[in-house]
Image 1 (cartoon, rainbow, N blue to C red):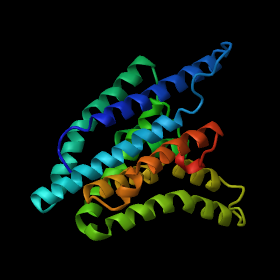
Image 2: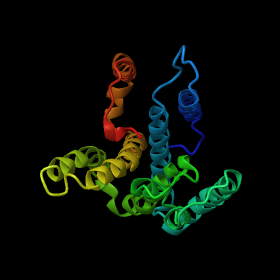
Image 3: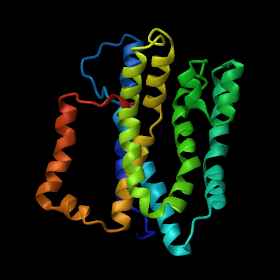
Image 4: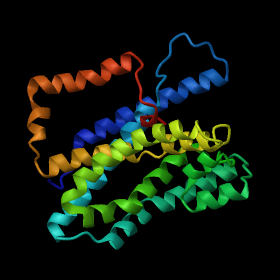
Length: 254
């Protein structure tokens, strides 16, 4: 895979950002009881999911490229790059949010946000609203904790692991809820915890991007099918049809 910039991803990012912005406009209209003559974009989670898929694609691509060029992956350098790229801005946003909105967070929220676990604060419902959108940073950072090691040591099994992550994180919560609802924990907070955790842990979405990166990197024969001029049109059309029918899989939303 070339190191050259993939310009098409810029367009995808722009589309994802636009979907999220339009969705939040609708939320503001609803909260302020503004007449909604035309709903611009009701499903902002589509944009969020797209961001996670792109992130998984890029990180996997970079790690696979490094493995080919350097014959190995420097996990220490990977973490250092991620820290320098994300942490300064992350903590700055938290600081400005607290000052700007005069927010007095609970101790649990402070600890979880300072340790880059804002999504866990959301799951535990312990007053995480210092800056709600930062939950996605927590998800990405937790993905980065395991991902370079998996790419480095799993090697030939990485595609299988990616597929299992997608299936596991999508199916496992349904299995757990099915079991728990038939136990003494049915009326506890456990079902809600599972729902929130898996709905916010977007490893399945990021792994989906990783699968595409793997297929492209190793020039898989699957790409021949995907690139077929007739089948590619069908693959593009299917998501729009499902979207039009308001179809969604709960654990692929936010």
